[in-house]
Length: 427
Image (tube, rainbow, N blue to C red):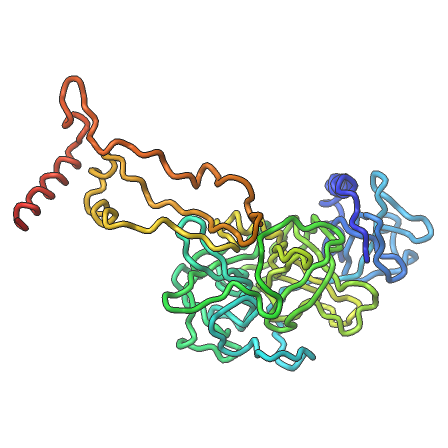
């Protein structure tokens, strides 16, 4: 088992990488850079290093002095941190999509129509092939149940618009119009993330579980050496270890989007011992999966990319820190409930200015408490932004020079006149 390094040591290495990150990324053949665990003689170690990922390693004798990143005979370092050169190339985990059996025997076929929908199964916008439904999440403001996955799974094009259909299973797995389960709500594709959410259709049943793994209990920060697990469309349940953080990598999204350079991402590899023979952590079609810290079942990352080299020794995966995603889309893995709307709300939709003046509180969401004796996500008191407003007087304000009508503007007076007229008509 790999020992998790001192956080202060990792932070120091990230700062040191910042002094050379751009310089290294400009070099020909460099595919990524990160801070990670040094690989020595084909084995992962506990040593924190600055890592340069290259498409192909070349002998030092073939390189000019200015091209040498590290030399086994004369090891190099940056501010006391060793430099490690890793051979790896990266691409999306949505293609080529794997259709054949990958050696995963399960009672449920993740590529068929599954109800209730849940994390780890086939899903997609009709314009793409298929990806993974990462998890069912809940919008913190509207309390709506949603699907979380990648931009390139739920949208697939910069021209995508809110309201587009999402099918389960995805098109490659036979999904058609009758398999609609949600509509696209929002997406983001930039240096921070490849992510999207879709609102689940009324009447579509859903489950918070990830198929074969269990229920997400919250979120946590990914750290070097953390043991993780995911549930995906293609490779089902796979386990890995976080071996890199603060990763900068360029991914080719095709003609519509082009090459996107994502930064501050997470790098994962199979758990030791190595070499990882037949130990896939991800393949095409796994995009959108949620990586969890296995010990706590807390989400740590949204999977979107992996290696392009098919050999087992090159096996790896890339994900975005999950708390960045949940903040961007204002979502929670834990259920969120809203105060029921009383009949008074219908009145206030028709006469908003009157309700504003008499102090009727708005609809306000509340996170549903997590099960167990201790809250798992957002422990402590309810955040101030979720607190109910103090009750206000139901009597219009009284002005010293105009009586209660002084604070009522034309809109309020008009609404009140309409209300009196309706009451008169209805007796």
